[in-house]
Image (cartoon, rainbow, N blue to C red; front, side, top):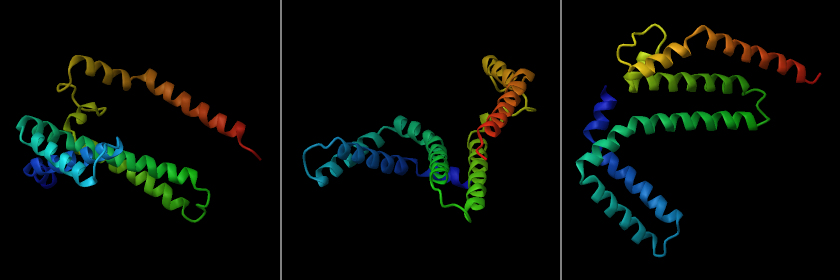
Length: 167
């Protein structure tokens, strides 16, 4: 709650900083002619114009939890790729697996804590907050057919792994 109030209290500042950085990065990436100072000044002026609109500021402030979650997921995926590509992980393999599991648990915790609407998708929760279409999706996902299909895919993967495993 403290973190959420911190972000909402300074929403205009966070939007200003984020838009300035993204605009400057975009201007530098497309290689507009001019000095870096002029590009930085242009990005600051653009973000001042954007922050002056309260509706845009409120909209972007509501996107911050999503952006934070995407940042955590991107970090986790890059962590996975580093551990998959690196071959010298003899003594660090247990730490890598532990870090990966903790990052996944952290992502799930963040998703359910920041987006309270996700709690309606849990198996034993009430579907009263969901619209009828999402309620049908929830019923389908937790159906016996889906569980059997997932079990079949896992077992097929295990059999495939043992078939192609080199001796």
